[in-house]
Image: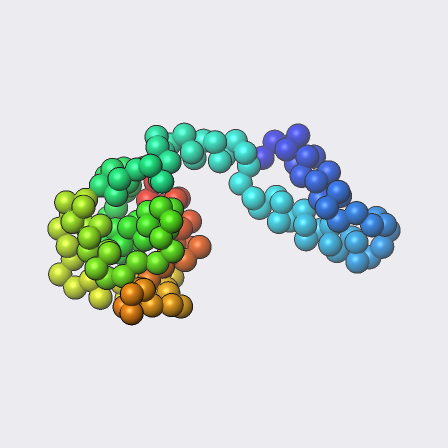
Length: 155
């Protein structure tokens, strides 16, 4: 992170916190806000990451999306399918929808999808959705699962 970007985040934190700089609570709040701002990826890092993806996920077919990822296992593939679904307006996916994505991508289906989903859950990439979909169990990708797809499966 460059000095100018750090200065900008310090000024942003000052504006967000406001209050008396001598007040101990304002100082604590400033420290926390600044820490959070510094942990956010920089605009340059975001633009570099976005440059690696030619099309936004929303406009990309599942086959194209999976083809451009570094998928090493079935758990990676299921996480990527759920990521693609989420970024195309589907908060959760049923077993049938996951298998349909495999078919659309012309990818061999896993022999035991339930086991693959269970492994994704153990890794923290996927959780069971709080509501059923069409009276069927559904799953959704977690925020850490999204980060995994964006960072680890990115070519």
